[in-house]
Image (cartoon, rainbow, N blue to C red; front, side, top):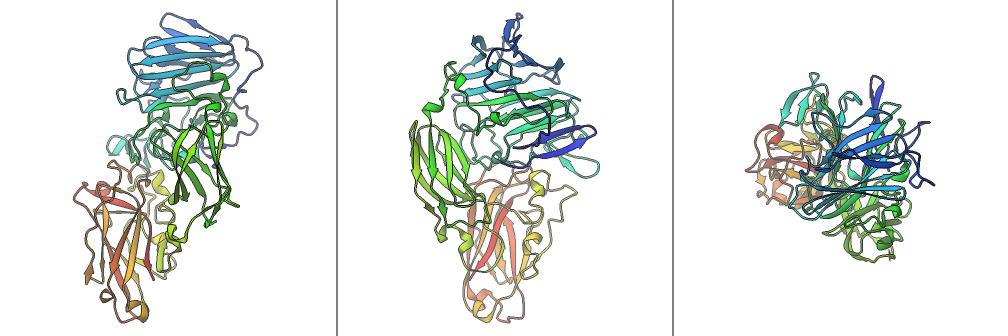
Length: 559
């Protein structure tokens, strides 16, 4: 699904992504062993259930609260730092914890009020399968965190703060002495971009393979923290619901399985990836909210017409109870989204991350809902409008703008960022790369765009459009043309209320501001530059990079 990313510090490396090269290193064990491995089974030491997978993995679960208290692979303990265990959220408290074996599967069940959590082991595998069923808001369960001892895996990547303690924002964004920034928020990746996260030393790999996120929120392009490293140790996350820069309400129900997987240094087996994983062995285990393959359906489309083939297209399904997505084939737009719970869904087609088509579909268990060719009308893609000039392109992201790529893994103050100020000249050839991805009231408000018009163009009124992808503290653009005409202050669109631009996320709600500029605002001398000033306005926010701001998708002046 995406290329891997890798880096090294000394001899230790980490790998993060969907299809990391494993070389000749061994992958995780098979999902359906022919027979139980020697040593497979469980015991009770009085305080914990102890599970031996019969491979190289032994783990313990507290009988008191369901914490994962030990994770021993090939004789080395990996679990825990700072006196903390691996668990749902920050620990559940006193729970009812039970264990049962069914053939080659051992299931530990944890009940805490309305929340149910499960650990499963399969004979001969170095994997732990986890499910979490959050039924309502009575329990604050938004994540599972695997806490890993310090020193076993080291890195100095964007989501690490091993080598710095200087805080520059809140208590979770740090600056190194060389000016680079680090934070657990800086994962770079959207959900659609990765299948697993973790680290490898070259001889041992520890990973979380994500679930299909059907009960998560935010859609395929959502970003949240995935892991962290500090002097205390490391953390790997499966985010069940993350409220930062969130565009959807929380969903409830069973999420999983997600998998803690050990390998001999390589990537986890692709058979564990959410698009490939089959769990018929779990059908009869009695997991609350579990729906097997036979109780699910599929949506398939013959193709998508009217695409701009320079961009990937994604098809998403969503309702209040579940979300799914799939990639449209580049040649013809064919798509297939499987494993869908029965129900009525909104189907949305995205060009890049910009919604350009929507319809309703109904999914039934055991069947495929087939759609004829979907046609994206020219009016649904704003790129099709004739423009006198355009900065960027309409794809739902700030891609191509100054500092856009860096902002998914660094703070705006990072030394690697180009200056956020500076004006733009239409016709220079660098319009997009010179225009900042983000605009803030306290940083670069008042940015100027210079452009010329022909006599015919200057004789007519025109519409200016500014597309944004999110906003912080109700930041929105107000424009002035040639210091003679100023637009009204637009109303703020609905956007997340939390931090976004400073924690690696531009993904909010795409919105287009339109401004009707009268002919009287233009200069009549065609040799002179017209000047567009873009200010960020808001009554909210604080100062600097936490002042009101917005992320830009595209700007154009229509013909």
